[in-house]
Image 1 (cartoon, rainbow, N blue to C red):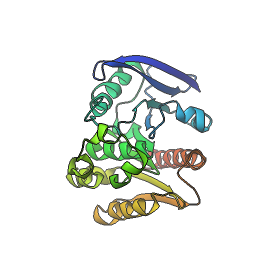
Image 2 (image 1 turned 45 degrees about the horizontal axis):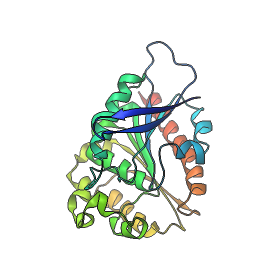
Image 3 (image 1 turned 90 degrees about the vertical axis):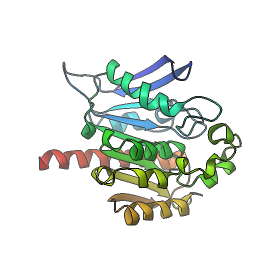
Image 4 (image 1 turned 135 degrees about the vertical axis):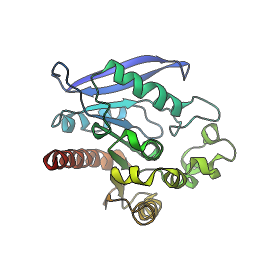
Length: 253
């Protein structure tokens, strides 16, 4: 696999920001690669996936591009005080990466994933842009914003003084407003460790996805905490799940 570390200027953020990219070593002329847009958690940046997991090794088993942007401490939103990271992600980063790299734009070849804060971002992208993707990977996602003040003292910079209660920030509200048919066309991988402090909230959210929305979700639970030991194991399992499902889709065509 080839690894790129891009330092680029963002017009929307009015700042320079990094993007980490994993690519196959050899790309045929005219080939368009499937791509996983992989988001990081609070307190990390896009380099964490390469530094803290064996992602590069497991990705080598598939012809997959993985794009890992820096999202700061934004929860992938337009911050109340700070950068407009949602606009950056959807209006600048994804379109520009597709111009720079040989990436497929077909929804069947685009997947979104993330851990913790990045899991929130992955769900948000799936609910807001369900026609952009075909699969979602959420590892230990923040699904209930009431936990945010306990892990993020500066949360008001993102959500404002009353933002945590506002419907626009709630994943369940985003899901209810989304096109239900498009959501059912997505494949969902949701994982949480039994020792994770957000396990109960994730159990409840999975019930919402499967019961209220009638989505087919692969929900993985078991031993594990909210840490990179768990995410290192899960990113390999999630990519295997993703590739297995792609093979089945090709075979069924």
